[in-house]
Amino acid sequence: MTRVTNSSNNTSTATIKFLYSYGGKILPRQTDGKLRYVGGYTRVLAADRSVTYAELIVKFWEACGFSVDLKCKLPTEDLDVLVSVTCDEDLAAVVEEYDRVSPDAKIRAVLCPVKSLKTISPVPSVESLVEFSASKPPPYPVVANSAVRKGTQRCQAVDFSAYKLRRRLLAGPCRDSPPSVSRFREERIPMQNYFVRRWDYSQY
Image 1 (cartoon, rainbow, N blue to C red):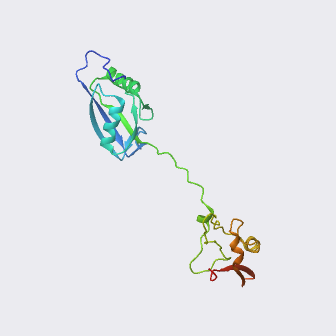
Image 2 (image 1 turned 180 degrees about the horizontal axis):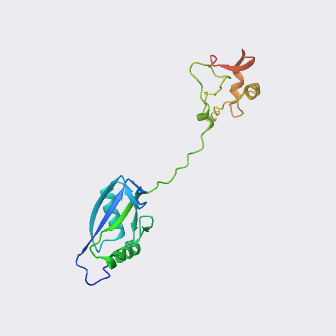
Image 3 (image 1 turned 45 degrees about the horizontal axis):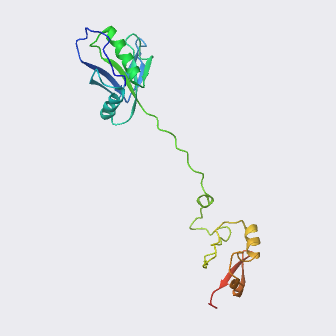
């Protein structure tokens, strides 16, 4: 694992300091147009020169309270040029650039919150899309066969249009119903010009 190393033998300090900002924006100054960091927080973090990128990110996370992406300004550039630091090699290169100017210089850093991955919402089911108002009756009857016998399958509760509902009711009970289902007394009750089958269980 590559660690941050000192490129100069005359370095007078064993630590590096980061002048980091987060929670604000980079905006041009009205007087001269020079970029500056406005709002948010600006703090100083000191770390050992042997710190790794992973250890440094953990320190920033502890200071900010959320995961961040580290971007550093080179000593000869303005805030419009920020270098993304994503590994130990990038961190060592930034430290080396600042050591060339001054070993005691604070590395200017900007912390950006990590963008969360967008979650794909599941496709809504038909049942979740159909909502009936409590004050208004449903526009058509909803039929669900609640009679379950051993060795038979429960009929699925499905919403049909009036046309499909009438065809399903006139077709008779489910094919998987036991032979004894024919003993049920069938009674047709008119309901909005359609028929709903009602089973009589009094014989059992």
